[in-house]
Length: 83
Length: 304
Image (cartoon, rainbow over all chains, first blue to last red; front, side):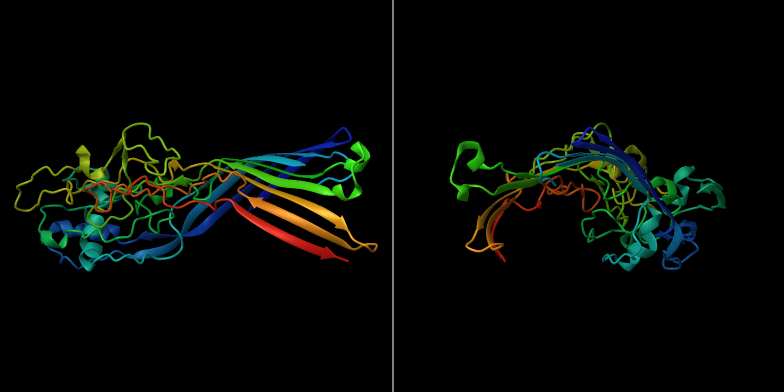
């Protein structure tokens, strides 16, 4: 989900200022983890073979991300030709 | 002229969406990878616990003895030096919290100024010949804080994402020969929690590859907890127009400078503190790559 908002204000004839926010939220992103970590630990009991349990790399949708930013932009104009 | 400043903060939890392809042996994958590595289920409980908490879930464990072939646990340390993003979370059962940190692309501060300046007419100002007019200067100045990185200290027993222990403030500089201060760094294998308790035990071979059974040695530093060199760059261009014999025909000579001041904008340093979990990597902290140096480009354009 993306969010953005900004306010722009002209300051005199040659100056413009803008303040804003941009955000992005990510949910249920793909991540990889070892699903079999619990069973691997059972190797400690000595009864299971060393190669009985393997890591099971599993892709799950438990990842998440967030991005927040604030910005300030100033635009100045001088003369007849400007950027 | 435009000037902008951006503050940002990007956070996510670790791992990308591709599977690992490191040259780990079968024994490491099947035994050592998690038994002595991080996120061992007994990490948060005592050795002889009956119940242990894994990500908030009570899981019964039985640990009467250790009985396996020690030779199967040794690691070759053949894994490639790891840089973020790494493919697997450090704690498989707690990666939602443990590996949550700054995103790899995060740059907290970034400022950009760009401008274009048409040089005022010299003919009007000082009466210079007309062909001396029509100059234009332009440029882009960028300053940005460094990007995050993780300091790895593994692998121990095949645990590739093991992070370093931090004992205090860790300074990062722009020195390409030693960008990361090692004063307050410690291999996870050297911490008390990971020292072998019974060096002569017949069921436990005491060496640094085999820390206390049931003790995870993931290091206490966070993912992307460190910040690399900053980035400052100035691009500049100057051009001159010549009006030709006919209306609308023009010849433009343009010279562009990228990284005008030839500043060394380094990429992140090598952050693998150890490639085998025991010895310090001699390349640790060295910077062996950088953004482009100064480049000059000439152009001639004819418009009609």
